Image (cartoon, rainbow, N blue to C red; front, side, top):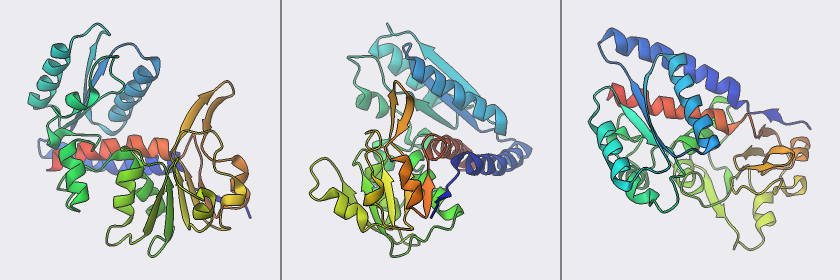
Length: 284
């Protein structure tokens, strides 16, 4: 068996094409979606990531505003930039790029974001709405990576109803919100969240119809852990001397029925869903 590739690059391209049509419709009505980014410091990875966001915007016709502050910026400087983005009528959604410089509390900064403009979907208000099962289109933004995973599964028609799902990783950006999304009515999966203190982790993974690995441990998930035919999504990524490496051993492709590789799988979907959040905010 060789797994069917859950191609995030191709799927993200299709989503961008759909968003381009939606943006053109909004422009015809005098509404222009706009993404704002706030970047503090000189982290090369962050600069590359933010640059990619703005290229994505240009590709689908979304306006973009970029605020870059030096690593010497004060807390008040960052607060002022967030206030500027909250007030900017041209910005329908924005992100504060993490990590922030050492000594600056990221959570306190993120809480200053207008929840309606939270393009990442990670503001406490929006996460609370996710817990209450009232988030989503026309209500509040969803976290980008989890919603990208669900979108990828749906577009490849991976069965989720009554499926056993093993999520390896309990982080705020992937594991916790994904568990809530996968148990929503209409998706109807049964979810187990696994982490460093979980007993018999490999046994729990073996029972799963869908496995999501999001811990940042190179090749952590072994082929012998995977139920034949299961869908496996590799989310965690680690920079090594050999380059970027995912959480899933490449040999898993010989056992799984579906495989979202890393790089090239969930990453592009995350970027596409960020754009979707910006467009949905403009539609709202």
